[in-house]
Amino acid sequence: MVLALTVLSASLAQAAEQLKVSTYVKVDGKALPVQIDYVESGKQVIYTEHDSIEYVTSITKGVERKKTRALGLSGKITPRLVKPDGTVRITGEISFVGIDRMKTVKYGASDYQLPEFWSQLIALSPKKGNVGEAITLDHYSGSGHVLDVEVTVTRP
Image (cartoon, rainbow, N blue to C red):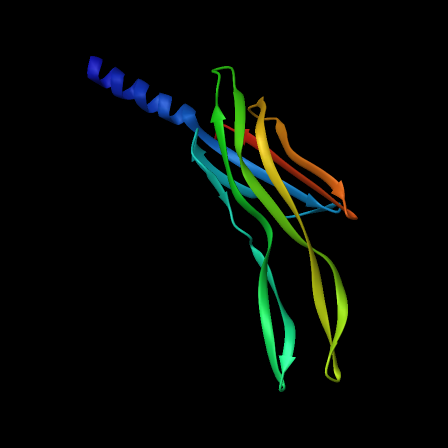
């Protein structure tokens, strides 16, 4: 009986440490798809760019040279429950890359659209909040763009 209670309490403690991490990104007023991850407290959430753009960088003897650049959020954060009352601390470093504008470039007799990029490094000083509330990781406004990144941590 004691062994059964020990196993039950250990599995309940592990279940309490499981977190649902919802990441919300808004760029220039447009919401990007929400990323939802399930991790244990103290484990990393990894962001990888979900989009990319391929563009022509030059033309030599009629052959296009192309480059591909990833767009979106990348990096890692670590959400951690730090108090039994539901206080959450988030650490890590992430960045965002977006397209600033497209400019027309002439290669030979042809016009090409070449993207100009903008990026924002979100080097997190530890952020604290409560389970269930939106925790702002970054609010950036500059270079003609507005970037908001928020994370909500809940217990599933």
